[in-house]
Length: 278
Image 1 (cartoon, one colour):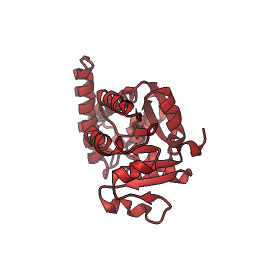
Image 2 (tube, one colour):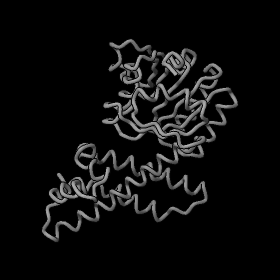
Image 3 (tube, helix red, strand yellow):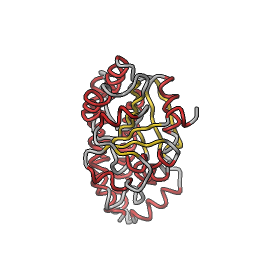
Image 4 (cartoon, one colour):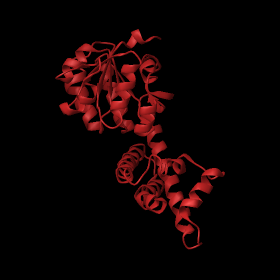
């Protein structure tokens, strides 16, 4: 499928990760349309060929695909109900890059289907560095046809696109990904706390472990993406994602409370780990 199939792409959510994703889509040859709640968010795109809109309704009426990279399910729900579904043409696709509830993803899919619109959950992993290098991983949930149609635009910023199954499965995979990362961070914190009383340098130990069989993505991120400047923000985002994970498990009637508590320990201790490694 070539780019002309999804020629006009709308983008909402030009934040830390959204801006480089939108730029990648434009650089891939798509006709990019943008809207931002705060006009200053549009400034980095002012000298580019993208089209800015003064309302979500205007953007929706001009495109075939809309990508949302916003903070919460509530914002996605509001945009979908109030602005996108009433103005998108039948057969359009909405791609949600935000991390949210699998149950909400299923509900939004049903809501879109009733209006002839495909809504797929496609949360991403890789942070701003992954977006800038166009090497994100996308966890996708939705019908095969909709995912196939969305794949060309997803390829603009991702080198891994994994279709997990029906609506909500992309969100569940992302939540499990984030939980496993935090669990690994908790284990790293445990190990580094043992280093000091045994006379080992935490910095040197981390370097050694990174070269051995104990290496992990969580360990590699320490002092690369997770730094003294970013750690507080990242730890707070992890904690919020773990709340979503816990709610999702409750909704699925699964008791994952012990795992959630352990993962939260990893998120909360992350600033201390980075302080040890500074």
